[in-house]
Image (cartoon, rainbow, N blue to C red; front, side, top):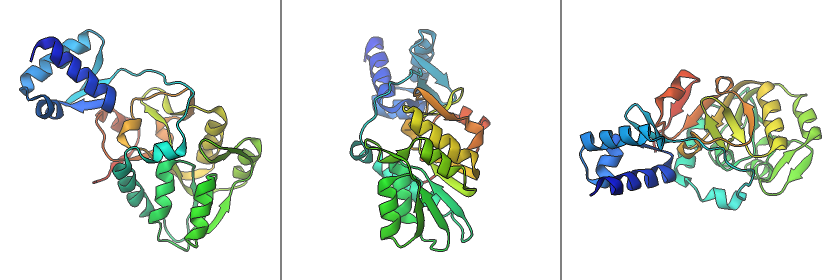
Amino acid sequence: MLTQERYQKILELLSEKNAVTVSELTGLLGISESTIRRDLNSLAEMGKLRKVFGGATSINKTSGIDEESVNNRELVMSEEKNAIAKYAATLIYDDDFVYIDAGTTTSRLIDYINNYKATYVTNGISHARKLIQRGLNAYIVGGKMKPITEAVVGAEGISNIRNFNFTKAFMGTNGIDINVGFTTPDIEEALIKEAAINKTYMSFVLADSSKFLKIFPVTFSPLRHCCIITDKLNDKRFENETVIKEVMI
């Protein structure tokens, strides 16, 4: 394979996955590790990627304000979301007062909850229905409904949340960046996420590995304010910023 062909393949894989390891590239391209490392160094010098320990990550680009519908996002990284949700459910104890943020991974968390003594609050419309169907003690935040994400947002929702003192919150996010923090496309949704984290003793962001090194227009929390539960961490620099739990799939 010619050098330019290897470069193109590496960049295509990074575009799809956002992060790759040397061992992954070796297996996928059938090339020696020494050649892959030289290629990554060259591409990094050209500004095409960011070199990290054991691999590379894509160069961060701010994403737009457009959001996919809940139905579309449900189909992405499904196995990884299930593993994250299953582990997160084990963190709920009898005396917990839990906030569950709107989102596809947080929705799956409800499927694995087996603690019927804790109390749950959510701003997710479909989440509230699932909580009721499972017979859990639950409340829904009141306010403006956002159809595309099926979330309650707005000033009234924020006011509701400020009356609570949660022991744990399980949050969703669109992007995670070392410098920018946790981000989302929508201002109103960012504000309600921020309010929930500020009223919680311990917050967990449930995020599959595709969310890392992505930036959306609005930051709702710095990394240090939340623990991250993910399926795979390709960039070890994040471990210097907050507590991260990788789950087995």
